Length: 261
Image (cartoon, rainbow, N blue to C red):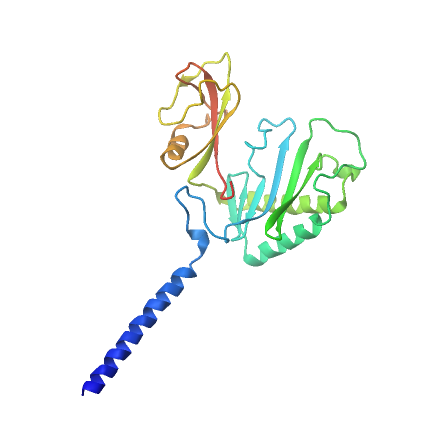
């Protein structure tokens, strides 16, 4: 009888140990993209930037690269974000095909190629196409790439890569959902000689000596306050003007930050 009880006790202990190990195994294989650090930034390899298309400069109002969000950002878990505003999710096979195509187009290209034909264009946009390869993002930066298509000023592979990203942007435009995040980029642009309303209390103010565009990355309660209080005019889409405690007027704008920013 004692032997039988000992055998049953050993069996029960082994079962409990097996369940415990299974639970530990399940915890270690949980998708890392669902976990985040204190700032809201995803952890692990799943949500790692694998491809990106940027366009900045020219006569656009958001010409500065650090303000303008990427036109397209693609992550390893399939997340695609366009202009930090809209999002879709690609299937794993689609991510693989996209990365393979861009690697084929960008491999062997100079980091900053020069156009070989066409007229000299002033105030054109700069295009940056990037893809992950060998553990790092490899990019090609081309001035006036979009504007010189008809002149074939750059290698055909660069225009093919641009078409690939344009196609993805068109897909986002057709079917997508709003992109939101727990972090925002707050931009304060001086408006000398203009009047503004009272500063929204919880929103951080620029420094007293700042005379240029002030940029802040915010998370938590400060980010939520910006989203809640700083709103575009519903009729004109203009960002609001506010006066800080130094009586300086700023146009405040913001956008959600991407997981890779």
